Structures are given as C-alpha cells and as structure tokens.
Image (tube, rainbow, N blue to C red):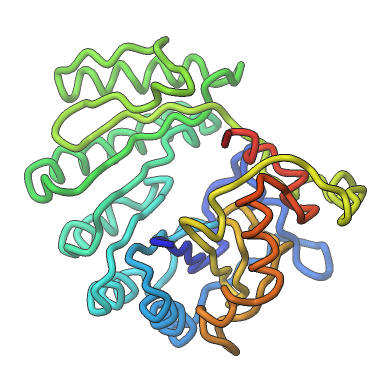
Length: 300
C-alpha cells in the first residue's frame, strides 16, 4: 500500500451534479453539514501513514481541500514527515493558494477538476479556467518536476460537449499544442500538453452509496464477482477520523476503525479489512457497498 486519502474537509464551494457532496445533510436535514479536520487529528493521520509505510497522501475524498484554513500548514506537515502529496482541486481558489503549492516540494502532483466548470455560468467557468492555465504556465517553469492533470471527467455527458470543446481549444491556444478531442477510450485517457502537464479525459461514474435503497437490498452473504485496488494500493480517512477501505466511501459504509483511537496498521489488520482484502484477491466483492459500486467494474 503506497497511498492514503485524507479528507481534510467535506466542504466545497461548488455544487456539482455528479458529486455527492451536496447530499451530505446535517442531522436536522435542513442544510449541508461541513466539517474541517482538526490539525491534531491530521497529525495522527500523517503519523499513521508513516507507521504503515505509506509514501503518498491524497488530500481529498469529498470536499475542496484548499478551503481548509490549515491547508498550508498541512502541506508542511506532509513535507516534514518525508511524504509526498497529491492534490485534487476544483481550482477555484488557485490564485490564493498557488504560492503554497509551488513552494512545497512535497507536492508531486496536482489534479484540476475542470469538468466541474461545465455547470457554472460561462463567465465564471472561463475565469476559473484562465486562473488554472495561469498556474500551469508558472508551474512549468517553477516546478517542472511536478505533474499536473487537467481533468475532463465528463466524456459522454450530453451537457458537457460545448464546455469540453472550449476548454480544449483554450489549452491548445495557451500552450501552442494540438491536443485533439475524440480520441478518448479506456486505454487512452492522458494526452501530453507540455512538460509534465497533461489533459486527462474520462467518463463520469456513479458514486457508490448515492442510492442507499439499492445498497441495502444486497445480501451480505451473496458472492458477487469483481475486484478493486482498495486496501491494496490505498486506504482512506474521512474528516472525522474514520478509516474506510475505499476512496469513494465518502459516507463511511465500510468503516474499519478510527485513527483517533487506533493506529493505522492495527486498523488495516482488522478482521473486516482482512476479509475484504482477501475477497478482492479472490475476485469476490464481499461487502454490500462494493457490490453496489459500478467503479469496481473498471477493474478486470
């Protein structure tokens, strides 16, 4: 296992239709409940990652990580621990946080979810895209070793065609390249732009857990064929410290323990974790959450 996803906040400043963030209601059901991970809990997450021999930290599950008031300090904590960081962001705050990212050598990769702009007013979408492209121009000079992905993860969505065409045209104009749309397939998703800057295309997927009725109808004793990289290449920690098997388990359906109470190696060696991992090795989806996950179908 080489990566841990740490959800430092579930708060987001966008309400994208493809993301379940807007579905996270408070106990009264009257509004969206957002939480920011305390710095002490984040330090436990980092210590747990080191103890488990993990090398890379992904700063997201749900939420926009750059909204966390301790974002810059968390980057320093990652660097001090000798770990690397991968940031996935919608890019709307990049003007404010760019210097923190560029000045932290621990940040090895930044993923911009530019597909999120397809649902914004055109003027806002174009402004955010220009901010991201400005960052990319600077990063290519200041941090040429850092990978940057401009994501368009909405291929096939009927409402995204015009935005994707515009975004790709602006990328080509900005970097004097000829990235051509229409070549997307399951084995050809990344297109080089300049240096370590890439356009990354993918199709939308349904987040598991968005349909609780379907999930609850599954029989825990039923054997469903399939596999996943969860608990093999990665594990995730939610904003409240719950450790979950999968980076898509935003609601904690497969809670294995809490980093506030146990060490990460102990949690990863729990009976539930071992059973799920053994199932993946035998191509068996043993947990109802996994059985309801369409993303598992991408792994053969």
